[in-house]
Image (cartoon, rainbow over all chains, first blue to last red; front, side, top):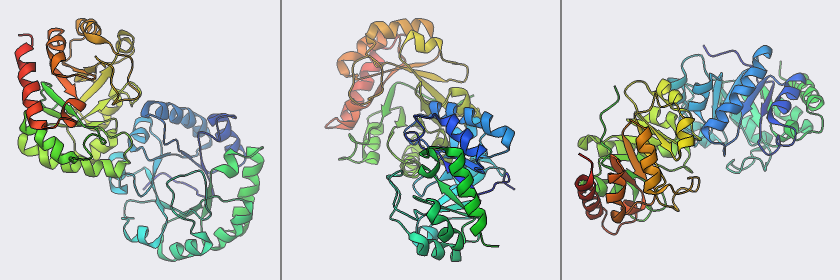
Length: 213
Length: 213
């Protein structure tokens, strides 16, 4: 049994987009607005710096009982006692993360196509992140946009909790939720918002409005 | 008690320098020439690719009883069952690696100055890599060259096994060994050699000749 988690509004951080406001400040405002889970993503950070960032976020998130997910670096998640990891298709395999982090860890996996799904062992996986729904400039290594149609294809084949990701804005929420996502993951829509908390509140209300019963 | 290891001739791989010959072929030839320990270093590789490279090297090295050390990625070392990790000052702390990998793992740490030494917890460390002795183009993030004098300074303050690193060629071996190194770590001197095995044999003979009794 992994830690409980709620994919409704999943914040993924970006070092460039949080630079001006600050990482902790951005996360704090997102949580104030209703973010339900946070992923620390900083692919260029060295291990020690990433661990320091993670520790700061854990301190901030713990009182809210919101899980912190580390992108890619299973060792950093283990080092700081984060609640989980999110793995791309090029990262270590989910089974490896499970073996290192133990039964309670939340293990997420990115799936961008039916082919990637077929090549993935979902046994050790707790949730999937599907996309990019729209083209996005944030992740240089993300595959092509799959659209709501692609999300529908994946939803029909995957029983696990699913969060939609990839350039999602308020106007996209209805479509991805009607495709059966359990929530939305966003980078720019929160990190680059003028008012992070207000943006979070609006997105969350929309997710809850359109979520399949 | 960590796995036994021998720092006499320590090969550090470089993806660009081994590209033409192949990683496994380069390592195989270095081992044929007498390399005693191998570090897989590929800072730009994603976790899954690095793990695949590591598994190939483990298969190759096991019959020779030569330990494989993974640069930076503690999780990859855990994933593949490598014998150890080598950590820079910006990587996860040695205590973290020890906690994740257990008592048998070999944990190495780079030390480039007396200041870095003072800031380091050597308790969980099995050996130190000191340098760069000479300026080197291989590691963009390495500090300034410390020379044989710098190596002497560190040797006087560190009881652990020490390998010298940083642009070392045959002509440097006498100096660094007389400064008290237990061996030399090389990238280019092996990876870029026309005949890797011959280069390894020559370097190893020189290390053994000049090693302090």
